[in-house]
Amino acid sequence: MGIVGTRVLRVEDHRLVTGRGTYVDNLRGPESAGAAWLTLVRSPFAHARIRRVDAGQARMAPGVIAVFTAADTDLAPIEPESFISAAVPEMAQPCLAADTVRHVGDPVVAVVTELRSQGEDAAELVEVDYEPLPPLVDLDRSLAGAVLLYPTAGTNVVHEYSSSAVDDLFADCEVVVTQRLINQRLAPVPMEPRAVLCVPAQDGRLTVWASTQAPHMLRDVIAGHLELEPGLLRVIAPDVGGGFGAKAMTDPEAILVCWLARRLGRGVRWTESRSESMTALGHGRAQRQTVTIGGRRDGSVLAYRLDIVADAGAYPRLGAALPEGTISMATGVYAIARFEGRARSVVTTTTPVVAYRGAGRPEATAAIERAIDMFAAEIGLDPADVRRRNFVPVDAFPFVAPTGSEYDSGDYAAALAAVLAAADYPALRAEQGRRRAAGGALQLGVGISAYVDITGVGTEEARLTVRSDGTVLAHTGTAPHGQGHHTSFAMLVADRLGVDLERIQVVLGDTDELARGGGTFGSRSLQVGGSALHEAANRLCELIQPRVAACLNVGEDDVALDRVTGEWFVLSAPERRASWAELSARLEPETGLVVELDYKPAGSTCPFGVHLALVEVDTETGKAPCCGLSRSMTLG
Image 1 (spheres, rainbow, N blue to C red):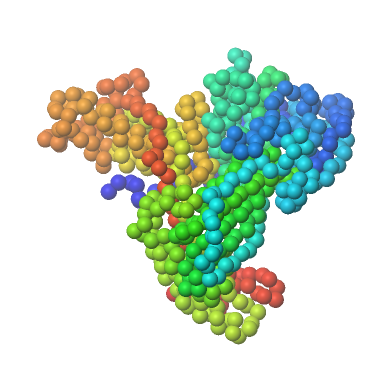
Image 2 (image 1 turned 45 degrees about the vertical axis):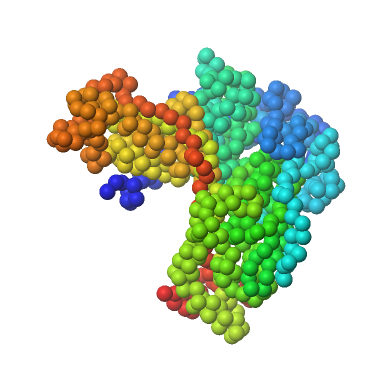
């Protein structure tokens, strides 16, 4: 039996739980010696014109090295992603606001000091004269152009997407239900806030340590803004304390730190405060959804419409296009024949919206699951029965949804049956009915949600090196932030090569170690990054087999790998064996046995599941009493 599928102790955990993790803000060694600190003066206004900046007192404060405004830099703003349909140059996000601030937390002035505490003191001495402008937080007002955040653009709409229109969408429906829903704005709040350290070398090369999910992407974006060849920039992602999608983006602060390091000729670092993180790290979700669902009174759903107005925030980043992904997954796990979808994204005077925890797809699940519940309530049927009736059947896969999305496989009815059995669903409904009939304060809510996702996108690079001592280096372009990649990837390599887990070193998060890499987001790491390492292990075995046969003086078909002991052996004489260490020392003593490849999956995968939530609520206080359920009933 191989190691995959067994329980093992995570190889990275001991270091992390004993406080020996290395985060950017922990770096106090030679690499950070003499690094100055960046402190940002941020806007307290959601929308205002910058009339004047006076940094005279700040420049004379103790420890101040330099103070910069937008006029002092030559940094180009971050252009909206090219796939945002109405992206225009006026809506680019500046590293420092020049004449207008557009959300609370917009950076205005950069203060560089010897010590971090000095920066906080000096920043308070910067005087910024703001002329308040009308804020814009209402989506309808933004759609109507009541306040134009970018007057020269002439519109607040930055992205529009729609599926094909369907004539008489609800014509044969006996019941049609519509409702406006809010998928609220969320702040990611990783345990470790963003942090960047940039150190220039005498030859002009920059080394950047950053709390990022995608070091190669960060390298390329920063290099572009600084007009450097990517090879002149090394990005290292050490231990990263959470990201949730928001740290996959390249933010203006990271670009500014690197520009300052080049300008000042010394290391510069920045670690945001929790308050900064809440207002300046990209937010998630922020969709207003109008759902309309129609069908028959027997529970059959025939048609569904989803209309989305999304809040892109002050600067259109990736979040502006995410509603397109919501539309693509709108019908979820259901075989709904007719669908119509429309999405519009608008700018507001709020923190920009970026990727967060599923990036558009969970919003689709939230909408369709609420729609199914409303439809079930309207026709008086159990929501579990309505779901079961409308699931995509097992024999329909591979299935193409009316949105155009392709699902590879699924058994949604089996997942529903499993969760209902585990929760003893009939007993829950009976208890819920009993409580409602009794009319007491403690009432019971039962919620069901079924979902499907599309994951595993893009390509990933991998390199395996078997050294002469038998240890293995496994390089990958992903960059973890808590998922356990070191263990998972080592298990895959150990399983294929027969090498002990402890003898495999997983190397990731360093652009000098591997030229290309996709990063960690979109539930892709194990599917794409792990598969890349697995494929590299297969390729290594394929390439080494004829060389092993030559070493053992037998035919190629007469050798095989013992995946338990990690030894190659002769099939006709099993006692004749050679270990990986022996082969590496003999065949490639200087470089080791090396294989490198780019891996691209044949297609995406579609994980699915069903959740059941049981909530006891005190209707007189609105609170959910602790352990209230255990006092009132026993679940079997």
